[in-house]
Image 1 (cartoon, helix red, strand yellow):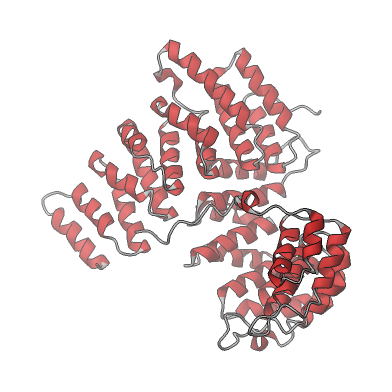
Image 2: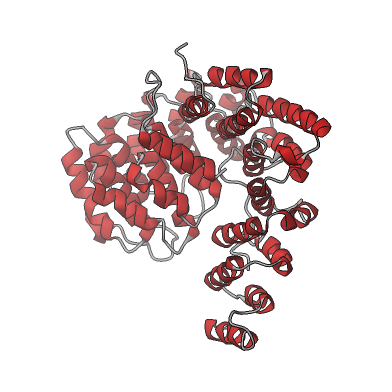
Length: 230
Length: 285
């Protein structure tokens, strides 16, 4: 199908209203027959996402087209809480690329219903890209949406998970752990846990990897503690 | 629509370690002269893969560079290829003279492996020998009919020259030999030349060529450009790297290369550029 046909289809569907219907935008994505057309169609769908477009946007995360997946993710993020349950239900166990994008969407939405999925993905996913995304996201969940008695336990488990990942042999996971710990420290301050995070960050300012060392120093300034010389 | 079947994550070590049959160092060295040619070939690969820097292993691999028994139907030297590849990983400059001799081997893949390994070993004294493979410029760097490669392994040579020749007496000659390849018909050769020219001259015009390569229609060449920009640490590329159409992991690793050049471990204060790079990297996790 040519771009012209897709455009015409959108025009036909939109005859009654000023903008194309969600159905027309979805059809354009599903019928795109080249990476370029897919990208253009996803861009239009993600620009005005509605709840009926959620399954299509989630499918695009698995098409192994980074540009389209990134746009689809942004569309899902705009939909916010409505996208959380479908993203969790349709997490792709076989395609780590799709899984990483779905996790990134959940991370940006920050809904604590994703906590269990993020904890297990951060600790043990097969794919480092999935682990990095989940690890970062553990720091910025909207904790206040949890009832008091659940919040404390959730934060304690998150802290232990992040402290473990901070010891990983892969620099990119230590880096992501710092980003997660920085977010958690801001959520927990002031507290004993927050001090524990600062101590961990302080240790990492002498990491053997320069990027990790730099990220730890930056995190300390963000959480309000100046990095100290050893 | 999927662009291509999913590949294993390329930014991470594979699980080969767990799968490789276990050998001892002594066994592997002994197998380099085993009557069974396939065992020799495997032993050469194994010694490189596990970075066995034992001097006896290096000596045995250097000897394997002269092997005449293992031949392909087309006259290639499989054992020499693997030995040359392995020696690049073992950080022992005793291998340099043997690798230089391999640069004039009839087998393209032996010459390619030797050039790559010479680039890794860091001994600039071989630059004049590497530059000989670029004599003839564009005309001599054309595809060989019926074979999947060019007449000379120009990408490997250019990459080695870019790594070794800066600030040596051969810098000017290197620039003269590499520059024509910016106009090669293959974009991957153009990009290799741009990277080397940036290393040789530090002129922004060549870094910017690599930034343009981030828009190449071929995703594999976009990934190569990301890796090249990270390797040379070209700071003005930061935004273009972050928005390139490639997987986040490739972009993250590329930006890490830029960040590393902005960090001085003894300096606690981060520069503005470093903080901007960190923010871009965070967004790609």
